[in-house]
Length: 344
Image (cartoon, rainbow, N blue to C red; front, side, top):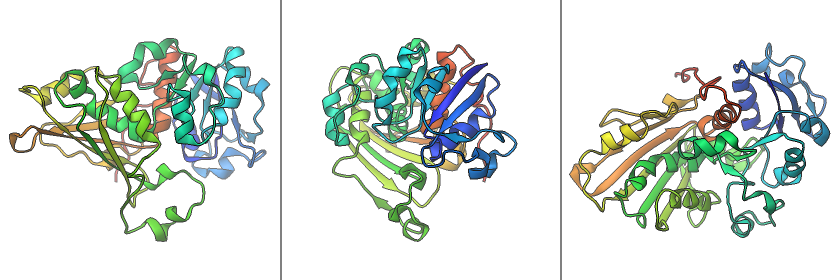
């Protein structure tokens, strides 16, 4: 049994970590922090967790207390993990960061997109990007994991087989993505109000989104030449889910794209390649750590269309964080993550 803590536990990713970890047989949540809710019981704020965390209460972050744990999850806004990561690592605590603090390897690029100086550039070299389907072996021995963002997870898993095989033009990639409202976080914001988001649909960040450099970095790692990517996210009137429609152009002969995807992901427990002709739905992955994919070649043309769906709070955040934890501590990779999706 390992002891873990969660820094920043009042947001959607924090409570999702608690929900999933309640099913994990080898993990005990010792500490969960929140400066604003210190002293409040977790089950009082989140009644769905009654019977699982009845004595656990939010507390002020304490580096000494956190440093005594086996692992700490950061479910915080960007910039927070910078301040504590070095001290915790020095104490032997392993870190799984769900924020964007360590996803980009270039501190200057990070600063340009996040509007502040990077607070721990000395740790960037050892941070491992936590996409298991690409970096499983590095994750196993890592001290510091940067959990991928939700859009980057859906996009990278969709393009991975095509780019690895060198079948498409890396300069002509288009990612047309849609997300549920929880992607904007739990904080009160006018655009997230029911009357604002319901019965509406809109694009945002078309001229530049913070996930863009992360996606580019990941796609560049899949092949030898820099990618040209157009990424446009959209807000949809649903609570959970991401749907990514990914376009590319074939530059090499491709006999069977379906077989390519099935072979690449044959041994990946959390990637499900759907039968040929499928159109995966976001509701089919609600509450689970699975990415469902379908690959199409409209009318036998040179255009490839990949459909990728995930739950933004699970495979796009907390579930993938636990998948990383399992790898880091030698547990079965699927431990605590095998429940079926919620329907309807």
